[in-house]
Every structure is written in C-alpha cells, then in structure tokens.
Amino acid sequence: MIIDLGVMNSTKIEIDSICRMAHKLGISGIATPNQFEAPMKTLEQIRIYKRTDIKGRGLSSIRRQIDNTRKNSTILALEIGKIETINWAVDDKRIDLLTLTPSGDNPLRPTTATLAKEARIALEVHIAPLLQTSGFNRSKILKIYREAIGTAMDNDMMVVLTSGATAPIELRSPVAMVHIGILLGMEKQFAERAIDEFPSGIIQNNLEKMDSGYITTGVRVLKENNSK
Amino acid sequence: MKRDRRRYLLFHLHSEERTVHVKDLSMALWRNLLSLYGEVQAAESKLYLTEYDEKEGIGILHCSADSLSQVITSAALIGAIDGVNVSFEPKRTSGTIKGLKR
Image (cartoon, rainbow over all chains, first blue to last red; front, side):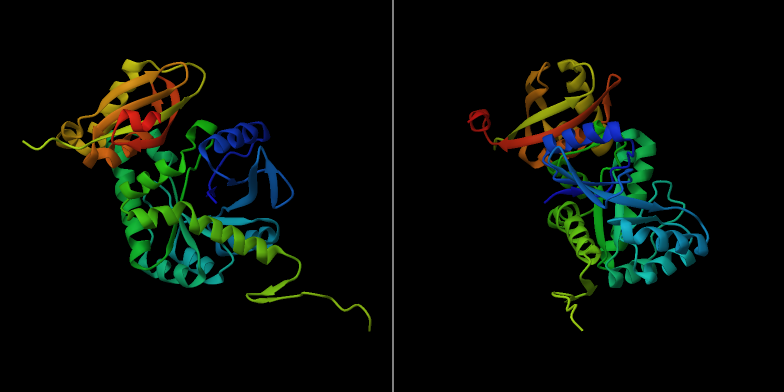
C-alpha cells in the first residue's frame, strides 16, 4: 500500500484533483493538512489521513501543540530545528515524522537519529524542492538531503520519501520515487521501504492507537463488562 | 566490438493545461540528464526518444541498460517543460519495443 505522507495542499478543491492524480499514479493514500474533522476519509478511492505540522520554536509552544493535536491527527510532523527542542520532541515519542528542510540550517544530528530510532520516528524528505530547482541550487539541496539520509541510515532511523506536493502535477509515481531515493543515496530495497513499508507502518500503528479500545502496544480492551 | 544492451521505457508524461512538443521533451530529458549526471554519463546513456504521442502524453524512449536508472531519475525530476508543469511517470521497461507493446 503506497501512501504519500507529505501532500502539503490544504484547500478542498485541490484535494479532489490531487486524489484523482494519485489514483492515476497508483498511490492508495495521502496524508495532508486538510480541513476535514475526521482523522481519515476516502475520496476518489484514495484514503486521506489528517496530518498536522507542528510549528514554533519554543519548547512550551511545541508541547502545547502536540497535546492539542495528537488525538485527532493520524500524522504529526515536526520540522527539524534547534537540537534541544528536536531532541526533546523525539524523546517525547508522540510525533511521527521529523521533516528535513532544504535550507540546511538545521541538519539531522546522529544523537537525534539515535533517539528517533528508539522512538520509531522517521525522517521525512520532501522531493518538491528538487523539482522546483536546477543546477547549483538543486546540487546544494541534494548535498543536504544525502547527508541527512546518510546520518539516518547509519543510525538505523526510518526514512520516508514524500512528494511535498502543493499541486497534483507535483506528485510522482512510486517507481519514480524509488529512483529519486536511489539518487539520494539509498539502496534500492531501502528506497522501496521508504515509500511503501515505512509510511504504511506508521499509519497502521497510529490508527491502532486511535482506536477506542487501545491501551498500549499489545494491550487492548476486547469486551467491556458493564454489569457491576 | 561488443554491442551495448539497450532498454526501452514506456512512459506517460502528465501535463497541466497544454501539451508538450516532442522536441521540447527531448531537449528537457537531455538537459536534465546532463545537469544531474554530467557530460560523460549523458553521452554514455545513448538516450533517444523513439515515439511520443503529444496528445496522449505517452511515449517510448530507449537508452543503454546501464544508464536506465539515471534516465528515469533525471526525467522524474523534471518539474516543467517550456512553462508547462509536468510529471513523468515510468510505466514499463523492456529489452525490445515489441516486448513493451505486448
């Protein structure tokens, strides 16, 4: 099941055309910061999962946003920023993705990658910046992406390749994404996992956690006894 | 001299609004391959656009077997051709055109 966890468009009109394009390309689900209330819905045979991007620099602001959004978002992503904040958020274990910025201001550090591996948090890499640039500018982004992915792989951290698309035409087919993953320094098998196994695993775990009967990993309420 | 192994690639070029002309597509494929992998790799690829239906956006290109991955990567990273936003979708590969059309 191929799920693009990083479709960044939030307008309802565009979502329809994004779903049509995703269906044509063989993608079965997308996660987007949409305006739907439910954490999941189906449109044009595409499953849409609610994604929330945590913004803010301070620890208290990030903590507050996580508290408010975790229960109603299938995917919670945080942009890689200051190391103290990021390491706290990773150690907190409630976020799903650490989003890499193409500016390179905040690289992924090995300490963060080690913590992320323990917390089963993935590094998210958007490919949209690679489509919008060329020549020297694209080369700089490639360097930043390749270094971060290298750090993640060295520390057994999961990597998730997403489109970062704001328009339908910015989506890419799974096969194209695998080849872009290889360009970014991944082995073919790892690139395949980065677009298939890792994203669907994160979604599956989170949907399980959002289920009303869930208590903790491996423990769930099967039948409630109401008679006292 | 040993003959190079070739690969044929069936693709679909999705485009916004208007169609992309065959010459513009061919130039964009070459330009991106050259920019991403350099002159030597671009020359080694022996990339050639065999067929392209401008209306449907479906076409076949061929290249050396060793550079197929680079050709797909560079084509997938094309964001726009002559002001038209595009998305390159590789469909199938084969050693012969006949195999692709089967």
